[in-house]
Amino acid sequence: MLQPEQVIEARVSVEKLAPYLKQVDAAASGTFNAAKGVPATGGFLVVAIRPGQQSKFWLDFNPPLPPAVASGLIAAAQGVQPPPVNGGTVVLAMKYGVAGGKVPAGPIPSPAEWATVAKAAGKPLEIGDLVDRIWK
Image (cartoon, rainbow, N blue to C red):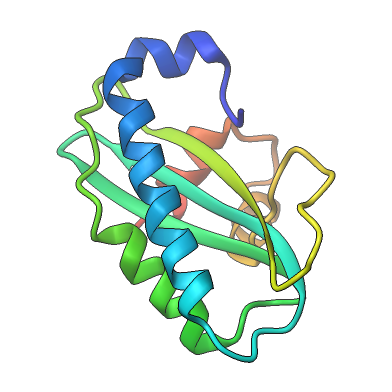
């Protein structure tokens, strides 16, 4: 988890979050299964949900996914209706191994856009605050 369990549970119902994540996983798996010629890779699909049933996704794969697969993955994930959240942004990451690639061993993703914003902040940021700074 990218945020403490008590933060997530205070912001979203687990009964609504779990089915949402399963649907996002199914959308991601469908995208990966349909992709042809993808090199072996592993990485994260980062999921952020904020009040107003808004969602945003970032990818952190090494090596990176081909652009068409990456955009298809984001589009498929965005097609899933997020659950309502209250009191702030909820951020989670889902790990994948694609085309024989290994699932990442590390627990925390670091999409390039995040690193740039975190460095510019000049201080450590809580993951929800970091995502809110990036989210446009």
